[in-house]
Amino acid sequence: MTRRVGVVGTLVLLLLTGVIASAAHGQLAVSGQQVVGTLLHGMGLDTGWRPDDDTLVRTLWYIRFPRVALSLLVGAALAVSGAVMQAVFGNPLAEPGVVGVSAGAGLGAATAIAFGITAGGSWTVAGMAFVGALAATLLVYMTARAAGRTDVVTLLLTGIAVNAIAGAGLALVMFAGDSGSREQIVFWQLGTMNGTRWVEVLVVLIVAGPATVVAVALSRSYDLLALGERTATHLGVRVELLRVSSIVLVTLLAAVGVAFAGIIAFVGLVVPHAVRMVLGPAHSSLLLVSALGGAVLLVWADLLARTLVAGADLPIGLFTALVGGPFFFYLIRRSRRRLGSWA
Image (tube, rainbow, N blue to C red; front, side, top):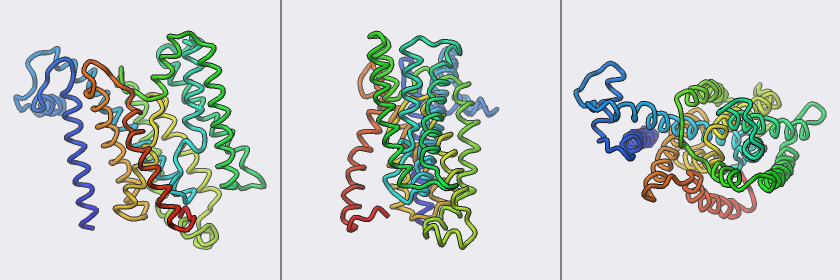
């Protein structure tokens, strides 16, 4: 209990610090005190810390706060989706990309960018990314399902095949597009929070919020599933229904994040496993703390993306990959030391 409180307290402190630092940084100088004062003023509390310059206030409310909010929500959504994937497959290396979410989203977004599809205005790329993610996941699921049940191994192998096909399609689309489209596709593939608006934050919240609540409500079933399918069935868990529901949750959480922020790798892999190593496998706390940890990781990654190189907004996926790549290697080595077991 003490460890859990310490971990949560540390993450909350890191999150608050990251939010203030991220909102304060930009071309217009804003102090951390002014950031806090602006937030409190928006809640009806006047501390006198709010900037007198209306330009600064508008910059905070319409440019920086939406970006920070989207970072929080997307990070939390990706981390929870990864935790659910690992629970369903019983594998610490599982993450949303396994079922084709990222690859399908990438192909959908690239198609919209390369061929100039603008039927939905500025929402076209996000909409196509979401549709692509859902289509890829549906294809993986329908292929792996037979005789009323879904085989996990077949699901994983099908996911690999769909990812390969989507990757080939993405390369073909990039070849068909012009140089401007290629640059935009490459940057989108690595993730960015640039240009975020409140309406996008609201859409992510509407989709990811209820999905996270449902995932937490299923935490006891995930704990029982960890004992084995047969044991879980005897204890009243409808394993197949749980698996299907979980895949839907993963798709919603990952797809809505990818649709508005691009492909951000390794958050769904690194965060849940790191939390599990510290707090243990109980999913009631694992899912909630993973959401908090994912928010912390993406807020700080976005801050680094904007500050590491002066005057540049680097792809946020670069920083998550720098963290996730070595961690992925560590997981592989750790699993091999367990006599080939992935449990």
